[in-house]
Amino acid sequence: MHLGRTRITRYDLVRALPAVLIAAAAVTDAATPRRERYDAFLYVVPSLAAVSWGVLATLAFGAVAIGVMLLLEAMRGEAFMPGGMAATVLMLVITAVAAWCSSVRQRRERELRHVQQVADVVQRAVQHPLPKCLGPVDLHLLYEPSIAGAHMGGDFYKALQVPGAVRMMIGDVQGKGLGAVETAAVLLGSFREGAYSAPDLPALARNLETTMDRHAARVDVEDAERFATVILAEIPLDRPVMRLLSCGHPPPIVQPRGGPARPVVFEQVSLPVHLALGTNDAYTVEEIPFATGDRLLMYTDGVSETRDAAGEFYPLIERLAAWLHTPDQEVLPLLADDLRRYGGQAPDDDTAAVLVVRTAEPP
Image (spheres, one colour):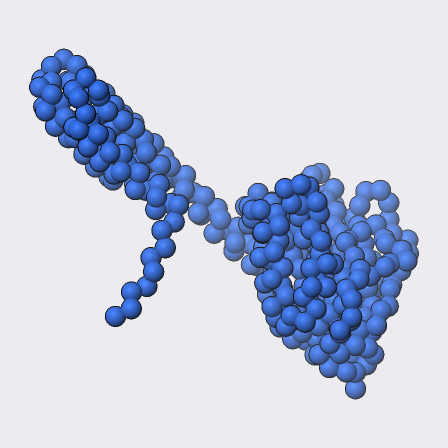
């Protein structure tokens, strides 16, 4: 019979500490001369239990610690002396306080889980999964909300197949929380409506700007001042090209089949959507070759601004170059793992990336 390997986590070790401390204090105290006292370590047991155990378990650990303390006192002949009685009363008080702390911790944890569940529902309502394929285009998604954002991030993305083309958007709303999610939802709704009717990407960008102006008129001042960086992309079904328009967003990285990875160079980058500095009077569209097997990575600053311990930015282009022959579906999982290793922790900003791959030649 094959027995699976049991993985002991740090949390398991923390939960074992009260029992380990009781055993260590009892054995050490009993095995040393009477003038050397180690039963004082038992006072810590209820507090340690309250960190990771429930109320009943905390009370149980406290009761065991009191029992062990009484046993050690009896072995020393001090069970009914004033000092022994005072120690027992003190342990009872510590155990009661620890049990109360455990109940407070459990209540806060339940509240936090509820908040996270609500946040996840809101996020899923805004951010639907991308389709894996739209016409001649495969799409691969990486999305990880930050710890600090409590699962409520302002990164957003969308891809739609419209008559004659595939249109995509990725962006990042300034700020976090419900206000950022609401703004992202507004921009996604505008894109869904405009993608089918706008004649080109500049018209689609102007729709986003108009929608944000209307949104700002009906929300509070803080949310009304939010802006968003956006990349709009269009892949015509009848030509091996991609059209791109940037509103203050980090440039995508294109990787021709078998070729080097390089950032897309924009002749003109427009202002972020709804930035208070002014309005976008004109939008410039960049058209780049995009044939079968070519890749393009769109991402938010949670990717490009990840830093290592020395403060160096994540070398995204070098990594993509190294993954040139990696299957398309494996690139973003590699990127997610590599970002965590490079940054040394879970992301402190929302992370979104979309890998676009053309899989068929135009008819």
